[in-house]
Image 1 (cartoon, helix red, strand yellow):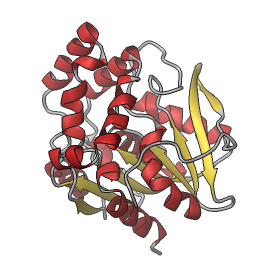
Image 2 (image 1 turned 45 degrees about the horizontal axis):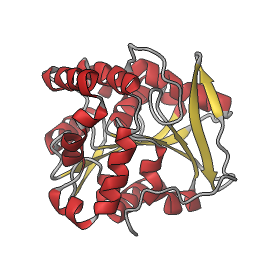
Image 3 (image 1 turned 120 degrees about the vertical axis):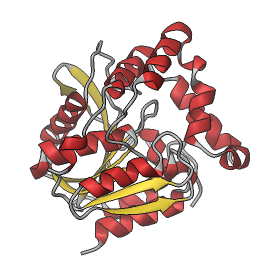
Image 4 (image 1 turned 135 degrees about the horizontal axis):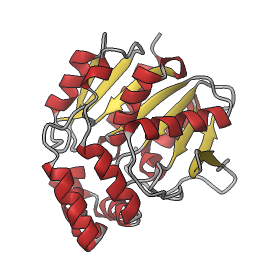
Length: 274
């Protein structure tokens, strides 16, 4: 399985725009009709296309719902502030519009943070939960405040190289220049207003008290070389969610792209085990 992130699907896929309290959210529904539903949630600065390496396998087993977070991709870009609650309510609006009672959840980085909120605050809508390369708490907002300042002054280009260096190991960037370039272009296309509003939400992130409320079976995935959300951040989440398990991958931050086969195997194995 390669790590390509270009779209592998034609325009025949269902691509609704769903209204979440006045913000139109770009949604894609693909895969197995009548199968269990799996919802995917992206990292900061990416679109639903980041999941392309998984889509062939996931759509054979699940009905797969992907979406662009507000402020990203083809979704609306309302002015901030944004919050994890707001992102979670956007997900509930999507599920309500699609008449979906319950989904399995797989979120990476920011998508994992939204999954934590949903697991604690909308437990009846969540099946199993995968929280990949994510954190529940930032002790110091300085990095986010610095990034907000840089993007306000110089756009996404001011931070792109540093972000990509965190997203992928140097070895992967050298081995997969085309994939790296595609992901960088995805990030650079993010509306600065939406990116900044998401960074503002991250600068105050503290969901430690939510984790004990999560009752869904939960898998935490961490990257051994992830500097953005290190293994210790994943271990904090695992230790606070009752019964959670943890898998380590040899990857940096965007582990589903850097280690697509291992990531897909871990998620499918967890979601299909009885």
